[in-house]
Image: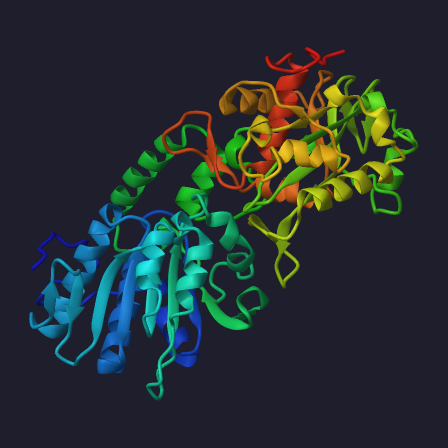
Length: 498
């Protein structure tokens, strides 16, 4: 049997669990809507995992032998605390009669309900769960798990038992590797609103979304809460966006992700697309057609993840757009093409590609984007077209390389300069810092949806200083271009700076 010291709000073999007030409200809402799935997004130490474990126990009690449940996490090592928490609850509920098979990590209650603890971190671990019939699935710290894996496992949520609604429960922290994929769902409801929402992105499945933060964990004393907040602030290291994520459980899209210490508001420019709502704010300062020598293309080839290509303008003289002063030699992202999936709700999924675009189709899309700005592809110098160097390797293509395939389709590109990712991100950060300061900055039109969606979704890497995790395709392509402009090594025509 597993033994562990339980948290203050957890059950022991003799004492029932003590629910917090926000947790009681969630269980009450679920009683009124038992067909709903449950998302528990929040900050650190809010009580999400305890509530999720309570929901497991309630379903085991209600469904008896019809209950076949799975608790899954990205890693088994990271789930040891949850394992001990669940074990304490089941010991209390069964008065010590629950059987636990340690090797299989399986509990069996006297009423016949069974629950297993599994890893869900990659396709191999997902395959182990495929083909089973489950009535309940809890994915803890779901932002660490590729959402594609979660969706596949949910196809096993099925039962013929009368009155049993197969259920998915997820706990989520903002800023984790795959949290961006859950943002369109969790942002539908604000804190305290437990009204079920029907999600078109989940085929009409109804969800209860319950936000929480450390301030909702009333089992903590004031001193305990403040002490833990100090630790979270130290971990955030002065990054207000990260503090808001960990302490307040903020999913605010206006945060800066990897660049959370930078005010990105000056970098947002109105959409200059002809006929667009912001075109009039450019007041004729954007030449039509754009001179080919001032146009740059930056692409990151995705394959199974989204491919992205941006059209940048290297500004030749000072502009003032909607009150923002743009210095000469600034980069302005005017337009983009991508292969990201559009969800039924209309939101972009920055992590998932449609998987349908061939090199020829991407070349056609990029060509159409260039023509939208009155530019002939032939007038854009080859050194102004940057594609990740990996796309020129003799892999990923049956006809030489992805780069060669694009070239045969009419989109000839130049391999990106050599250099590590962090140096490229530093160049991006420098340009962001210089926005509206009289020095060359980096700007992007608000119409570039994928760029802004993904830029704000990437998070600092937990172990590699200056690196990131998340949908980094547009960010990587921008880094290639910034390195090239800075005179990156490996360019066929040398530095591109004026």
